[in-house]
Length: 557
Image (cartoon, rainbow, N blue to C red):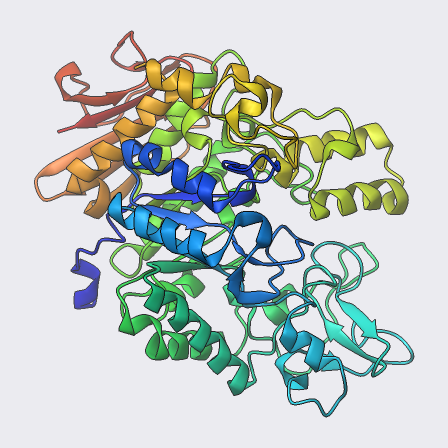
């Protein structure tokens, strides 16, 4: 265990709040959230008690994938405002004691980026090698990989007759990290933002930047395309490139970094986030987000197997303990709303939202709150596919109906449950039109339940989900045991209760969470429940040894 593992750092002690700028707050009535809208809401975020704002991409983009396709890394998206607006946001955030973390999307750029427009001009162009170009094979694509948003991962460009790789949309060509000049361009751009005063980066699919040489065909899992996962995730040079990034850029600033890393295991994560690895502070792993998947992947959504979820989270808690640092999240811009997914968004809405918050925030790691999670925003029940906006779910719906032959009702039900648009409906500020998000027509419809669940109502109600989240954030700040204590799973085989213990110096913290709508008798060997030790609680009736539906209790001893 290196000395660094014992270091107290601000990013371990922080709570991060993710803003999806398009849906947070519109200031000019065009129906699209913007930077001035975020500035207007800084006092709210300060009141909530969070420390860091992570902004989903705000850079210039044609918006094929809502800003995750960047055409200029050093310009602001027109709909969001200007660079002056960003400078003002940064200055005011810092005045409110809040840090700003940008979304760094450098596995791919937009096909409208100047580098790509040069790259496609000719095989000899100096920018050609900034991207991954290959000749076709037998008049077809260079290999059988399928793209993440459907179709092939290759697109033929008529100018040179060669294909370029796009692991996401055809408008998101993959950058070639094996090219040193490309890496230097990326590092120089990162320095530019950090010199401006930005406090860190969330790095989009950063474990995909190194591809296996030769780009072999992938295994087919029933569809017409092969799976690229083993050849692009955690590739041969990824650690070398991240260590270079750390040495050249990150180590020279006091920043927070988190890398999105699909398909990463605990063992692999140690290489990315080990305190002595000199790469990143933490990664977003997806293992716990996949426990309810089935034959159609995320479009299956089985009921939650709590024992499985506990096993996964416990494995990450103990696996990284003293070696690296965990990120903690239930929600983000890519996931359906947690209260609808694993809570109960009907009868026990408030109680289950508070329970889920308790369970997550008291684990070891840095918690991430996604906008609206703190008021228990729910999935949206759109009635028609035309109301959806996300490229991924629209393509998936088409695939289900046209390729698989699924009946449209079943396909639509799957989209409703799992679409990323569940997370992207406008933030619900008050009971006015569109939840106070815009005076215009929102780019995506608001969830009609904004009259029931919104910030204004919940700020007035001391028993609301919002006030409970505020309490959770404050509790974490006031008790070092939550940040630095060790973790021990209790009742690992219990199918309804998630219970664990944290330990630090001479303190013990017991966390008991009922994930079911039944009352459950709970006995933890060697632990006596004393009401005077109850420090956080989402109920009013205390029965020792029994948890009511969706009850959460936290004892400090």
